[in-house]
Image 1 (cartoon, rainbow, N blue to C red):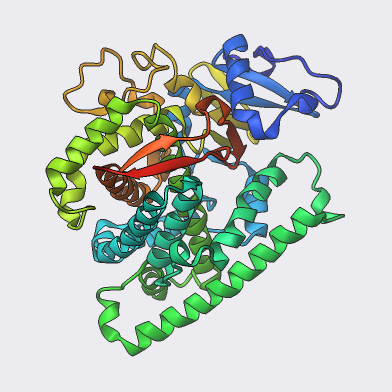
Image 2: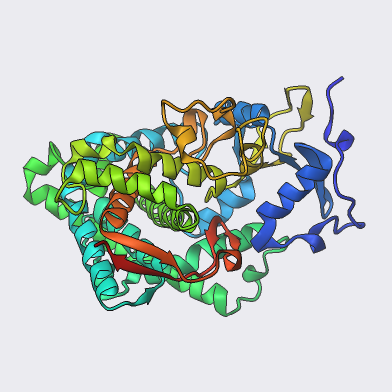
Length: 464
């Protein structure tokens, strides 16, 4: 007989409320790991009148990812809240609709468009270098996470819209200012048992609504500008200069899509492209500053490949930076920015001896398995070398490593994210020494839709 939800162990709750009073929303991912230590890799978490099944077992997680979108969908509540914020695209679409979104978005994110955009990316890399050079020359202590957020929002708005935000030099920008209000509120609303914001809006709710309104105004203008460019420059129809132009051309051939779907995917790219990459970069600095030998390897690689150049300036050189990619992979194993995923079965289903009812809530915690010795040798240690082809790690289970998801809904933005990480880390360590000013022990993990680091400060010094 298969094991049902009621058969699963889990933390005891109180009548009606379950474990809701125990939950620390900003620390939820760590709480789930602690309960997994106590109750196993699949357990029941009573919340209010229903049970959530927490899953950390790789085989079950892989099954869920591979059987999407037919057998599993994202949590309906999460989809509803995202749509309220005008986020309706490839991230939260389901079924046949998702397939159409996926085709459109993949076309705009393919290697051809990344290559075409590469020279524009280098302008942003140079701006980041110039800022850091000034910081180093003047001995400033900096919030490097904010630099990463400015860098990624500049890349994303330029890649997605063809709009040069240049928040690195102008110290701000409407998109970044508004985006930082959106992610935390989406996560809060998903976790709130009662949608209080529908009855009484507080200051944060109003700021969130205003941020969404303002960003949608800008996106409408971006769409109008892009259509005008396509009309006035017929050559762009063969070689669109950005993601927006590419998907507008796709929409012309798809009668089921219009501006609503275009806007939804632009919001999706903006949300996914800014925070996730920026926070991965921040976590890599947090880890690299604890392990000088890993810094040295990137530095040696950068010196050997770049010579007198200060950053990568040819697209063909990007793939050569294996040490940088290894650090990125190890960072995402130990500090994944999306450790929590919520799914619902579309029908009654049995997986690996466990029976799940249609509509039951499955909460995937993806980091737990990646930190177990049974899946990775020396799992608690930061060892980027495990990701190099010549590595001799005795245990290396890629099924336990899913920073970009898996199955048919594997993140289409992976290559762009890795490209940005390679550009930034190779430039940083080629030109600067980096010192952590905030004690490592004071840096905390904060869960707010993405898993970010609390504020920390660093100091850059010019390499002699």
